[in-house]
Length: 440
Ligand code: GDP
Ligand code: MG
Image (tube, rainbow, N blue to C red; front, side, top):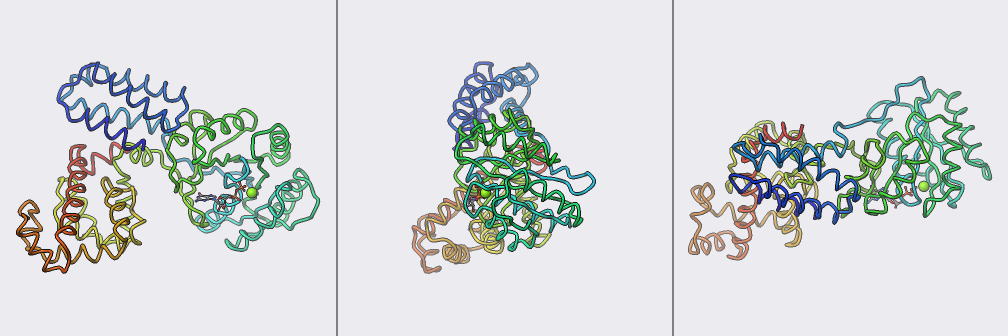
């Protein structure tokens, strides 16, 4: 993945003391290849690498005590910049009703996202929201939105069969005004490919409705194609933002990276699943962190603070800051994993965790957590604090004591080793505080 590729490049950079201009150029060539392979648009990748190279070969960087780290920071900052600097919310600060129009190709997730955003506006912001479907192409598209409306308890405009999009938009506006809605969401029709009829329809609706927000919904799994679609829409419709859907999938990440540069508009939300609560505000700094393989430590700490006791969280943060991670820490991580909603929840957030989770899931999921707990319980306090004490003889004893096998003991020790390495990496970057500062 992009994250693995970049992680490799940066580990090599950080691993060296002094850096030459040549080292930086070589690394940046690798970064460029990694970006292109992740579907980042060519001009975007080129500009990115040029900007970073120029900053990174500055004398102050190469002559600093920690050139590798400095270069990584420059790349991180450039990634954040490329993704759009700050989190950007909807701007609905107008006299009601504020109009939000959703556009995009068929199947990109417009209708689902319309309901997700409506749900969020209602629940989080206490807005009175109405949704209307202008999709007269796809059979039952209007009914689909009505059904979602029932699920999220948001009103939908009554359907009048045969009415055309522009007329539906007019009727929706009037209804929203008369009935005192704060926000009117217009879900529009898509096509399989960008075509002129679609663009003309979007423009006509936008002329009538004068939306505060026109959000382009893009499927992040479509890679390079997503970039072309964004370019097309952006040329013809006055977009105000982008929503990337299917961020829960196996996207290579490049679409997100290109989107801001191609449209000039911020990514406002990420769709992370089919469920109607699977919508997140898009945080560029966090996504950059994830891409750089540093893990999403900010989310992790926030999430942890929600679901574990404050002392636990503080203790964890302070140990992480010192780069410490023994088997006691692993044990408390495992039990937190269970408390925080099983194996899926933390994937990718913590450095080294993704790998560990993959291994765990392959091994049989949550049941394995119980086994691992048994293995750690069968160790002495000394062994837990100093895992390197655990030799072959001790492994046999631990396996017997826990009713497991030496293989399982080895697996656990390997997982611990990987996570401990990740912790050291955090420490190298200046601990949690340093990482937070770096993540902005
Ligand atoms: P539209 O044609 O653009 O209106 O697309 P729909 O909203 O009908 O969505 C098409 C399919 O994509 C549906 O099955 C949705 O459940 C699914 N979908 C939408 N957003 C997401 C997402 O963020 N993650 C995943 N996994 N599926 C999504
Ligand atoms: Mg639809």
